Every structure is written in structure tokens, then in C-alpha cells.
Length: 340
Image (cartoon, rainbow, N blue to C red):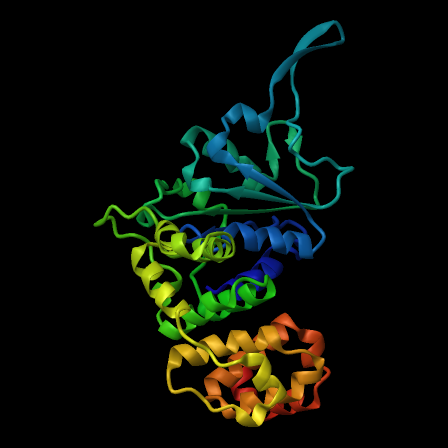
């Protein structure tokens, strides 16, 4: 499942009010490290007005979930009561999304305490408010992250989904968050999903490998590190293979993008695929309201794929410009089979 599909699934599984006699569903998201499971759930909570509580069961014991016991007197009798942990929501709190992150790294004694929380929305004597929704995420044993499989009894309390990396969804996030466009151009140019995400197979001693998370780190590296240290730092961020290839990509000479946006008739489509992908990001970054028509004129001279990427990235990054252009809207209508 892609990230964009996961957001829709979260909405359709978690938000509807259960019918009488039914329990509210909880979603378990599986996937390798570094592909954005936690970030997607957190953004979903914020977008829908939920308070987000990150519960790391791997750092907790059963007593952290149920609370500590204390003695109370009732009708001259001493009884044991349980203090509610401060992290749990109360009836007076806003609606809450409880997210059990890294659940597959939790000790089994803690997982057993989570059984009742997920299914019955209760732990011991404490009942969670009705406006509490729940999700969890974890790695699979084959992801070599030290994760353990969940007990079958706990698996049966979730709806399960597998999140996988997708270049188009990654590109949408990348452009919205204004990461370095040269990296996105490189990833697109390889046309291999392994460029975006490829976990080490354990056959080498390289500690770093490419993933959506480490590519975001690489964007920071390009911003912070001098060119003399760039290659070695990137090797420790995305692995030596991708670091070497990325640095070679960064050495490519591009035409003057600002000049071309002023004089689009001078644009000639490059032959090299890597240059085309690099220009996509460069044009999107440079375009302004007064050069938007030139931008669309250049897009018409690009390959269909590059034109689609230019228009899609423009819409993601500078939506206010895109929707104001009759030529942009006309292009989208004429090429809707590419855009949709």
C-alpha cells in the first residue's frame, strides 16, 4: 500500500462511529524502517483535529500502562486502587489518537497488557474515552531491525496493512516540504524503487542505506556540509553506492533556468535523462507568476513524462500559481490520462 492510500485507509477505518454492539476498529501498519509510517499517522491525526499521543511500548513495562497501586479507605475498609498514567486521555480531553509505535520491539509482558487496550479500550479499571482512536506500527522480523512477531492474540485485535515505498508519493511529500530538488531528480532518473529504499542485506559492513528517511537526511547534508566533505558524509547517510551516484549527478551542468523562463523559445530538450529530471525540479523552483506561461511552454517541449512531473510538482509546491493559469488547466484537461 502507498502512503496516499494509507491516509485514506486511516480515515475510513478509524474515523467512523461504530454501530451499536460493534467495537471501533484499530489499524496495525507494517513496513520496513524509514518509510514514514509514524509521520503519516501523526499528520493524519493533526489534519483531522486529533491530539496525537505516541506510546512507545518498547520503553514501557505493564505497570506503565495500568498505573501504580495505592491504598484507599472506603467504609472503614482499606482497598487497592490504581493511579491512572498521565499519558492516558480523560473525558475532558480533546479527541485523541493513541499510536503504539515500534510495537514489534516491545517485551511480551507489555504486549499482553496491551491486549485489553486495543480490543476493549480499557486497561484494568480505566476506560478510555469514546473519542479515542488507536493505531500501531512496527517492522517485520524480515526487516532485520530487531523486531519480533506479534502474538497471534494481539494480531487478531487489529486490521493489518503493509506500507511500501512509492516514488510518486515520496515526490509529492518531497516537493511539499521543499527538500533539495536535485535529490528528487536523481531518484526519478534511476527509475528503480531500490534507489528510494533498499535495506542492507547484511552482506556488507556499511551501516547506511537509502530510505525515504535517510534521503531527507541527505537533503540536510547538501545544505550543511562543504563540497569537500560531501561524498564521505553522504556515504554515511545513504550508503556508498547511492552517495557516489548522487554526487556524479550533482556535477551535471544545467542550462540557465532563469534565462529560459524569460526566453522559452531558446529551450531545447536535452538528450540525457538525468539532465531532464534535474531541469524538472529547477524549473518548478524558479517559476513565478510572470514566467508561468513560459514554464508551460517549456513543459510542452519536454517528454510527456517530464511534462507530467513538471505540472504535478508545480501543483504540489505552488498550487496558487498553477490554478491561476488557463494554460495549466488546459494542459491538465488535455493530458488527464497522465495526471490522474
